[in-house]
Length: 146
Image (cartoon, rainbow, N blue to C red):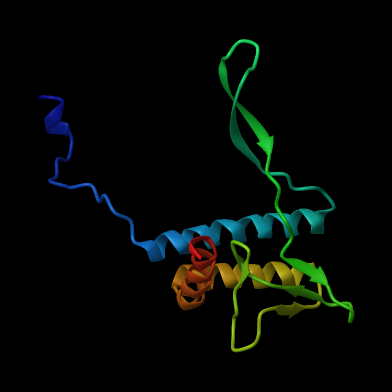
């Protein structure tokens, strides 16, 4: 028996373009994941420092190297004057409006914050925030063009 006969062969074509809606959803979901990890770390009393790869060139030798450096992640939540935690969802530097003239979620503690972040993440994956993400994306893009 040949080696190819053991494999399942199919006819397939690689998709070259990615749906922009999926790209925006993925961007927001990855940022929400960072916020969830940040809140978990705060709840457990530790720090969360994700890393990213950064390329640099050694001035003396001219050699190009890649180095892992800490990534800066800002909290999307804060403690309000009434002692409750408020959470705003951001797409880039733009705050997403979750309902008409409502741009934040109020929770009592960090456990509820984790639940709210998970719910927003699931809503994003389900496509419930697509219109709000599109508006935020257009607003960001207009800032670069104009």
